[in-house]
Length: 329
Image 1 (tube, rainbow, N blue to C red):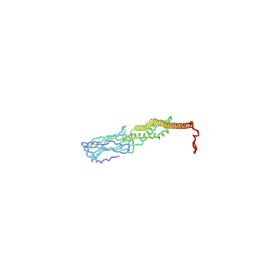
Image 2 (cartoon, rainbow, N blue to C red):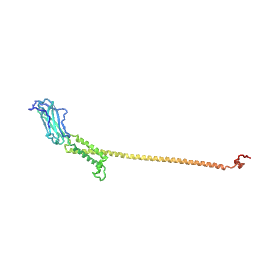
Image 3 (cartoon, rainbow, N blue to C red):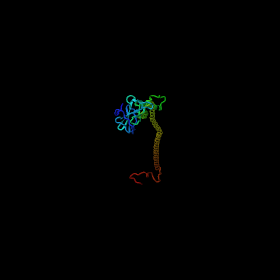
Image 4 (cartoon, helix red, strand yellow):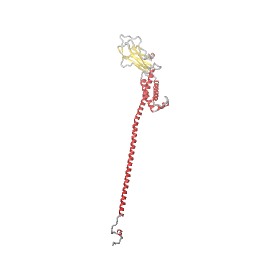
């Protein structure tokens, strides 16, 4: 690991009467984030120059002093894996900090800070706070925590459901429930919520993994997120059952009213049929009475003619019809 520094003339570096002043240029970043990468990275910081650096073309390299990069618990980055250098280039002073994380383990994850100072006699001393962040590099191991949280959360949700008396805490019913519709939806919702915590806490962090407590806290947070996500499915299912239960009396009432309406329509039809039959019977009886009355009237007229008395002076023969050719005497 070496810098591509400019060539410098041999001989002593001249000492100016008045050192030049270095000012950190606008927009400079003093943090070197590694995230999960296991590579060598270089941080470049540029300074403006107020004044003149004597013989900067012949002697461009500037003397630099660097303290160890320390973490909050006094853990330090190996000095052999950290290099710093500064030199004059194109009217500015360039400070470079290179850290090699490739190959063997560099250090535990975390935030490491140090002060890098340019102490060359030709410039006024200037200190710069530099930060290096290391995230836990193996994301697959952290993903195992997500799987554990999902498994524990699934079992916890299954345990909380209504189970038959005497059913064991771990049984074949657990796997059957996982394959059911409510189980699949619960696991999916819980996993999505868990991955959100995994992404926000680990993947998006630049220094996660500095202590074992962070792993335990992440596992607990993912478990809580899984249970909360899976619970939304059960809450939705319970709400649907409640709505169905509230609709059931109304449906039963509608069915009862429909049956009552059909019964009333049937009774009305029977009443209309009975009334029609009654009217037909009354008409039949009236017709029979009229026919009987007509028959009696006809018999009365017949008897009246057969019983009428003969008038005096008439003979029986007068009433009889006479033969053709006969004359009355």
